[in-house]
Amino acid sequence: MAEINLGRVQGGGFFYSSAESGTSIAKSTLSPSGISPLVGDAVVFSNGDVRKVTAVSGDTITCGEALANFKGPKGDPGNPTIEQFVIGSTAWTSLSNADPFTVQATVTATTTIGADAIIELYNDQPVAFATYAFSIASVSGQTITFYALEAPTAQVTLSVGITN
Image (tube, rainbow, N blue to C red):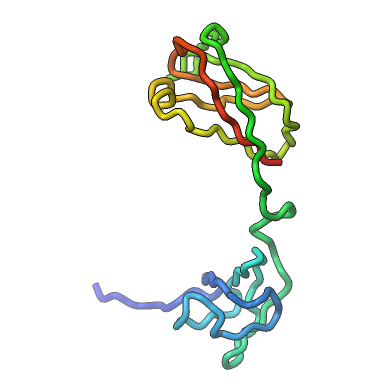
């Protein structure tokens, strides 16, 4: 059976532009280079704006209004607030139906945790993490629940980054 190359699909291309987000840009600012955009293709700008190509004329690309923004309404996240939680060996309680985890411990953060906050558990104790595989199971208000494969035999300090 012979192969037939149907070419590109109109509106199926995705390009990045190094230009400021706008409705008129030079083709030379597009990446990948060497491929001409078609009407309907999308252009992503460094500020996160996504615009649809509405016309191509020579070396000029005309784009429509911004359809979306990959950075979202908040913009770039700030630096996290680091909290350290010292959890004694007796603070871990049995857990069922969370295989492979068998125990949990709950702590209360002093930092306000917003509804869209980013919560990160830092692996700053490689041996303990390799042994117990600590994980954040849930966050509710200021309460953080950790899971572990088994209860640590000594107290552990878990570091959590909170970015609101």
